[in-house]
Amino acid sequence: MTVPKKTVSEHFWSGMTVPALIAILLAVGVVIWVLGNLQAALAPFIIGFVLAYILQPFAGWTERMKMGRVPGALLGLLVFMVVFVGLVAMWVPLLIGQIKAFVGRLPDYAVRVQGHAQPWLDTQVWGRDLTSMMKGFDMQDILSKLTDLSSSAATMGLSVGQGVLGGLMGFAGVVTLFVFALVVAFYMLIDWRRLMSSAEHLLPESWRPEVRHVAHDIDTKLAAYLRGQMLVCLVLAAYYGLALTFMGLELGWMIGLVTGVLAFIPMLGATIGAMMMLVMAAVQFQLSSFEPYLIVAVIFVVGQLLEGYLLTPYLVGRQVGLHPLWVMFALLAGGVLGGFIGMLIALPVAVILAVILPRMLALWRAAIEERN
Image 1 (cartoon, rainbow, N blue to C red):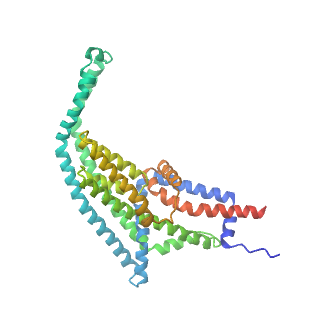
Image 2 (cartoon, rainbow, N blue to C red):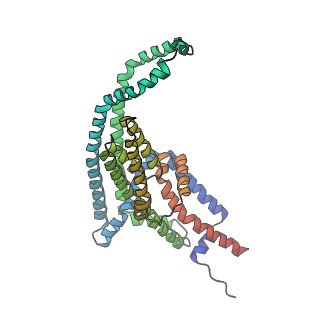
Image 3 (cartoon, one colour):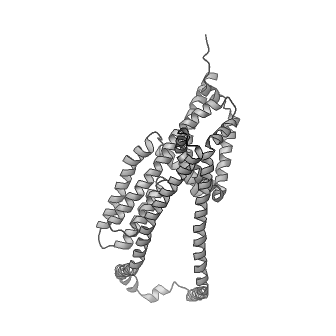
């Protein structure tokens, strides 16, 4: 009887011993720990890698067209910068205009809030015996706190100045991060093949065919997720911004932008967006009518249906195929281990594990059954 020869895949996975698997898991844990503790230093490299990964097909196309990889990398980054700056130039004036209009209407909102709150205060507070209400208060403690408050008022000007300076330094930090990320992306684009080849040569030669095959599957799903999800975020930001502004909600463009951008992290964007819409509707419309709240709810529900049944299936692709429970676990684990950066990379890591784990477990189980 002829024993069938093992395929490269079976040889690779069946040779995965328990110590080797433990070593791999420990290595993954170390990487996650490093990401969690060096978020600020790693941020430009992570952003640069994602940008290079997205632009890699374009750089490869220019190389195949005999244009050279360096011109392709420069052209790809230039197009990205033009699109990015164009979006900023389009959104920022709208945001500034809405913020100015909102600040100008704040006194009117305050008067309306007072008008709604005054009857409640009259019935719930002023209608009671104030003497009995004051028995539970320590007047000496209140006077002491007022004294401390007045002494701290002299430092408010200095605090405001420090806040303005901190804001300027924060803006400079964002610009610096953006520039560093572009530089990292450029060098990764021009050296992409060499970087991938160097990573491959770190592996034993017998592993390389299977690793190459797994990497191709990961690339297919990861590319579908990253490129598609960015388009989903852009479309959702435009939809929510236009819809909320059209209905007359204050700061509609800003709320739409935040909701769309945070849609990159499933559930987080929808949750924060819904809260911002309801809070702004409560501030602006208060209890004057139920209709604005109904319109906000309809806009939000339509946005969720648009994302779930049209944008995500056709732009991200059904081939990613992550179960909602797996998505929730990945987001929670990423947030606990790596903070906001961990949540950003949680789903790409989940996509990678969704490719590796089923293949490893199936072939490992087959290898155990063969030995028995």
